[in-house]
Length: 444
Image (cartoon, rainbow, N blue to C red; front, side, top):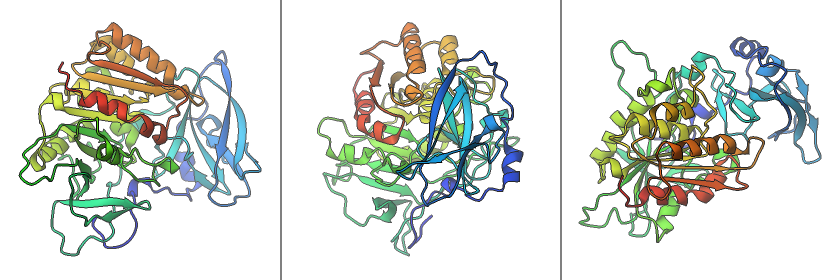
């Protein structure tokens, strides 16, 4: 959305902080949990960081039947509210209720749409192998509002297809600076891109604007140089926006490529997620069939052709990569399996291997059945937090990948970032690793 005023916003990220209890209970799907009491119980400390000064804060979720008075939390001297709860191994949806208003956990990047424009946070206790307590429709429902951005200062007579932008104190503003040989340029599509509706289908994939970073040197007069392309999921989080991502800041990939003297230059394409992120990036109804999802198709049939049309790209599979973190890591790997002739390199940071398809199967089952994919693969993980950033399952996946034929130093790399958490700050600090892997001139 082109506007001459206002601040950048993501319509799909807006939280309805005044959810009516009745509506929340109608949507709640967890109810009483069915796991047996023989499962190992572990203690978890929940922390709520209020933005104002609430009188009471309560922890609730599917485990407690979404009771708004379920688990009272205690105010600490630093202003936070905490409570320690013993939970059996498994996955849980939860929220905080502060003075009657419902909030997701802003410090936890794992979340799913709550059906009303907000989010439920996801906590995994133990190995992470338990199925998430989500109904089939939640895993598959793509319905979401369009993903659009406001940009300050765009000239009223602006008619081009791509808006030059930069981040300024957390806002997108029109960038009227001339391109240089030392700094790339960040662009935002002026129009919404969408996957055409096919007759007899109802995919409902939300239309969205996308970001493109053109590297330094791209605008050199007379240059015909073509660049490799990296398609990035959660594409609103990968730039130099200091105020995004719940205070962690973005990945700063644009400034990383601006400043590097060792990495090859590339075109970066950021595809923002919608509020239906779990359904967009997830494994769908039956992941073992390896059929393209609407989001896969959007990437290959809409986004890539548009990028190849408008910019000087290297279009072959060897120079076309996908990259993402958490659920973005999952969809990166499935993209490689579904479209191996288009996307030849995959990078998955802290992939959410615990998330199943509607049948309860995960990406580990894909590798077991289909073996090594026809793509080069980078995978990493941290080790911090209650879930160790998924380290146990990632190690299991890595061992399986090696058994199935991926070879370290040839077409495979795994990095364990000891002490790193599951957030954008951690991914920013090691983003150079997957970029180096992707941009190496090795062929498969």
